[in-house]
Image: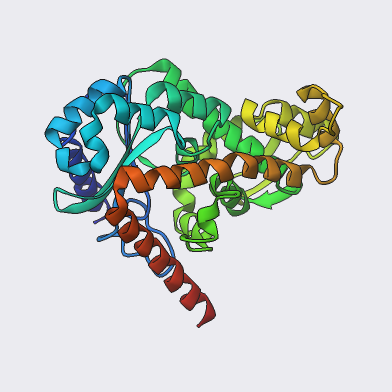
Length: 337
């Protein structure tokens, strides 16, 4: 039965993909429509499917997609593929979403992102938006042989582990680790205040421990700074200042810069390495890292959500926001009942 479901899902995803231009460096689908989530909105069969399409040439891709799927776009379609690509690349988190689309009998939304923009986000966490999605289990439907992209995807997972280690105690469970990792891209996200179920991270992780293990198992086994007792599902890490400094020095560049900005007093102008050395000796090291993450995620999520009003159109934005608020309300009622 599980194999049948997997094959059926794969066929569904491929059929949906066939409705779009083929020039994709990466295509994946994620969310509650793909991986079961706990909570009141766990109807996987009817949940919206969330796709991301990564393209080398967004102008050419949007040009072809406008011809194939004109109705998917908001009023911005009349401005043409060059303006759409400019909006995609220069506003929000570098991704252009078309939402609430009926395709092959399923409700979907899909985001389009430039390959170069995605690679930058994976390596440096400029926005931690699509990079954050890829720190959680996703179904990759299509991927080309771009070595730089594949390497960046791997680097993003290793960075997620390192950031989580800095916010965890000396010993912890696999579940603790995966909850930290899944929560990285929600740190400071204003949608967690209005629009998302507050238990979203737990709902993502708890039913999907095996998928997280599959994603991170080999990275944990090969990491010299952790003792990974996979049979017991338990981990121990080096929390010495030296160990934390090593971890801080391997964090993505944007996160290091945000930590430096938070910790560097006005007029001091210390270099990043000096600041990270200080943070490594600080008992509140984990809290500083969390603040650095929030400084990336909060403005990114606000800009992207604002952009969504224009890319989806006002009517779809209202409907989509109402669905999110309904999920949040159901989660709150379930928690208080």
